Length: 370
Ligand SMILES: Cc1ncc(COP(=O)(O)O)c(C=O)c1O
Image (cartoon, rainbow, N blue to C red; front, side):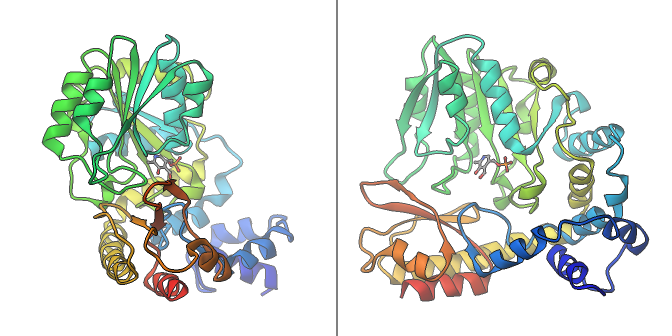
């Protein structure tokens, strides 16, 4: 077998006796970029603990799906979106009309940003929270109202409530919160959302909810006309590079967001949609990722604490911790050991974030800090 093909097989994670070979052969014989494969290979020396990806993913069923379905990439196959939306509606116990697909949840957040800024005013967000998408809100003219977390690094729902006024167009809650990994108690969150969504749009980002036992707020979208839930396949489902996410909301909101998405439900490739459909069936993979993440996270927290790093209890696949009392130059240690970690979020207290990788990666991470 030619080297580039072997490398490619290794890359996508199947052996020579991989599945779906009839379809796969027609894909592999297509002209490949010889340059791309070695450059991807060279990156495997790095340890990626920066972006909260799933180190075990994609799931075996998703991998099979990518390989088996590559040969239909020449067609638009719009109907695959319908299949995925039906599956998602079933999974989340909502109707077909309550779902909108996006290229990652980033596209959903972006559509929400564009929609809510049709009227000017302000938006309310915890600080620090996930804000890589909020530049659109700023550029389109909303004023940012940042609400500090509590001393336990939790979202301060009472303070968020107090920050809302008649000009508030959007309230964003990341639950669990990125970068802190803290979670809102569900009853308090439902109360908060029910109250605030009377007058303003509330966007709940559940990117990491699968790492917890908490139930999604999807169950309340039809009683609360102004709630949008953003979900992603990038984290627990291990499909970050496949770019697939979705919104759950009542029909009117979904229609409004869809009006801003030229190729409604089809910004995501057929391969990604089929991989998502397959992933939803792979319960074994999900429960294995869940428990491995818990074990490795606990190991990492224990070791970080031995190194004088205060850790916040995490409900996610990342850990928020302080390097204020750490003896060495943290970022230098990461750099010389070829580890990509997170940045500093709060200067005061020197809080940073690390993704929970595989056990061997976290052993290397801890060794690098010692
Ligand atoms: C809280 C949160 N929301 C949304 C995203 C965007 O994810 P994606 O666009 O890959 O679905 C991320 C990615 O890190 C995230 O942490």
